[in-house]
Amino acid sequence: MTNSLRPHGPQRAPLPPAQQSADGVPAPRSPHNPEADSDTAAPGAKPGRPGQSGPSGQSGQAAKPAKQRDAFFDNAKYLAIVLVAMGHAWEPLKGESRFLEALYTVVYTFHMPAFIIISGYFSRSFDMRPDRLKRLVTGVAVPYILFETAYSLFDRWAGGDPSQAISLLDPWYLTWFLVALFVWRLTTPLWKLVRWPLPLALACALLAAVSPEIGDDLDLQRVLQFLPFFVMGLLMKPEHFQLVRRREVRILSVPIIAAALVLGYWAVPRMNTAWFYHRDSAQELGAPWWAGVVMTLALYGCSLVLTACFFAWVPRRAFWFTALGAGTLYGYLLHGFVVKASEYWGWFDHTWLHKPLGEIFVTVVAAALVTALCTVPVQRIFRFAMEPRMEWAFKRDATELARERERARAKA
Image (cartoon, rainbow, N blue to C red; front, side):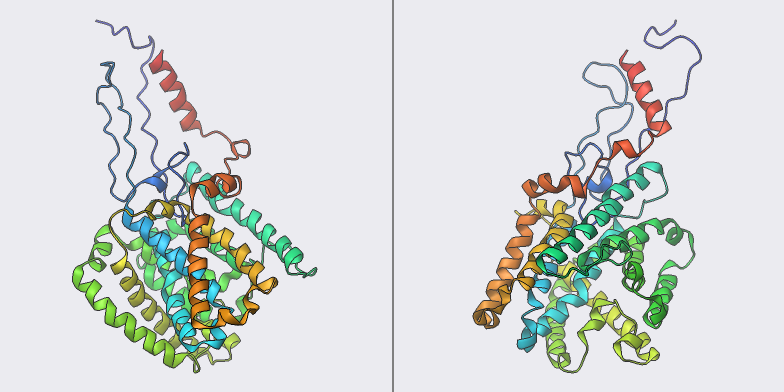
């Protein structure tokens, strides 16, 4: 008997369901976005099963339930971006407070490595598929162009520096991370192909640390010196995060962090803080090349230990700030304008801000500011720059067009 619901003529094999795209940006797209992919999915979330019957009784692919985000990763991203904002707010104050500079040093040891490891972890499934390349362009490359231009113009206007050029080859202030993320994600297939990805990434980082010839173009020093953390994230599995979330690790992390603060306090007058930025070679910091190898390896070890301590204390369940983890890229890029304005317009010149109570006040304000910038209303306002759709700039994928035609035939 012929099935009247099927079109006459040659039968076509059904197209495979659309796959989810990889997450690699610090702040995944909001769930309302129809283009949102596995950015909104928690690791290990299960999609709906094909072949289930719908309400009408017709067999087909059931509607996929909304994927659940993992509160742990959203909490980690939010707390990391708060530490980034605090660190930037401490910069004008730390010169007059040895304790604050020690705290600044400890935070700078792990806050960006933690952020980068999470970015690498959510980039594990990235490949050269057209929809993922499109997401890389619209979610990373285009925001870089827009914010690099905006920061340069802001520096001219607020900082009064007419010589500030707009150059996409010289990332200014915070935009280096977008360049790095673009390069790291674009090379992800390579790191998944080679036999020993982490040793190779570490070798690249060490060579960069002793190569002043690299220069400042695209901030390649930071791209290469932070690369091992991204590759480590690519190699990590959910059970690795479970290891650092055990109770004994959480207890052990307390004396480790206390020892790190003591060591940081001791190192303040003896060590150049620029080592923690990973933006210069050893020779540019006035050290011999071999010191670059030793210092880089030592800092990597400290960063991994403190990052593990940080992850150990990240809450696993949802809190009021958990949802803000989806907007951390907004907070990261936007808070820089306020930080730079405070420097240009002398907001830190008040003497009372350099006292302990003033330092606490600045810390609280920085945390509140970046929290507000991660909220949904701010995301709605700046989505045109952070998450442009740009359908006009891309060809329609042939597979997706075929899927749409098949869905239209199925409805008919």
